[in-house]
Length: 487
Image 1 (tube, rainbow, N blue to C red):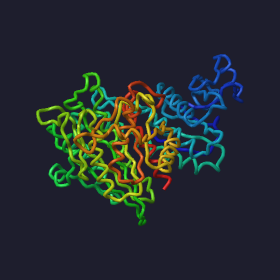
Image 2 (image 1 turned 90 degrees about the vertical axis):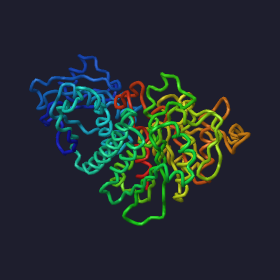
Image 3 (image 1 turned 30 degrees about the horizontal axis):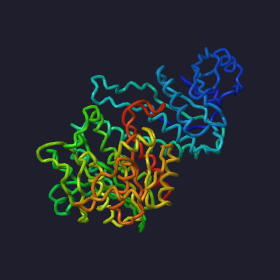
Image 4 (image 1 turned 120 degrees about the horizontal axis):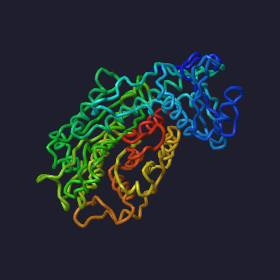
């Protein structure tokens, strides 16, 4: 489906479906439409819709009126939801052409409006059907979706918004596909191959892959220890993007890449393993970002780093009470093997520090405790640098991805003290999301760093909204894009 913008009169458009937005309590200026809305008791509540056959009264075959809710409560999230609802309702009648009256949103410019609409319709149209007999290919009959405006001054801004929306949606869908793929087909080597395919033929991106033998030489005991129980060997992947103009500024983006998490010998209950293919969502975010990074073209060097590891229980698996040695020589007592993410991230972060970045952001499906604290739609952000945390939260707000900062309470460090090692991999009975953050902080060497615990929102076990359906969400990618666009 092609998405474009053009100048024109909305009621002169020849199309199968014409979409109009209206605020709650407002009336439409067209007498025909206004009469039908009154008959249908349309109030304009958010996502409420009425589909009207025009019977030749207009060039459009049908008009779809969709509510935006109360004007005083309007924001881009409301627009995203309404746009997704409108598109899905229109798509159900299999139109070839859809036209949308370009909406002049209060407090938002044309670029923001177009981007929000495009992202929401692309993401609402997503489905993962690779493993279904009838995989849905070709079912979308819509060939064109056109924004129509009579204000030629905003055409350029709207076109830029469309382009940014397409880019963000494409990166998010790339990530969703990786996370939705079952672990049988998303082994550590498959993450490696995905990184290589992104870099292939792209002069701006370089990839280095460290195998088990190289990890042993590097002393990456955290990665190696967690991988011991699996037949699949571990890897450390390092993607590098360099802008065309030389820059001294570097950013490292680190992802957790556990391709399946059984919990190891501290075995998870059966039901808790149903969705553990998602434990590589942080690494998938890194790959999703790098799939479009040359189009974002930030004026900063970006390093994408993740360890790809499968975590399984076997006679070779790490045991509770074992002590692993990280890349910097610091020892970690493993009391609960199911707190494995922070252990592989220790080595991943240490490798990131070696690149001498100005800042590090990591994304990880790290703790169930974060979901207890914030629910399943909100990412917890913990940082050793207030300025960086604020930049991440600002980017998240721009991307309409929900994030909330949690404290790195220094007094809780005492709970990570081990009698036999430098650290233990679990803290006290409470506040595990903070203990996990404090554990990771031990491996960033005072580099400005922000940790994003995406355990909840990376995978929707129910529909979150009209454009985020059950399954992998790609949460985090759009925030990273917004973050880099600031450079």
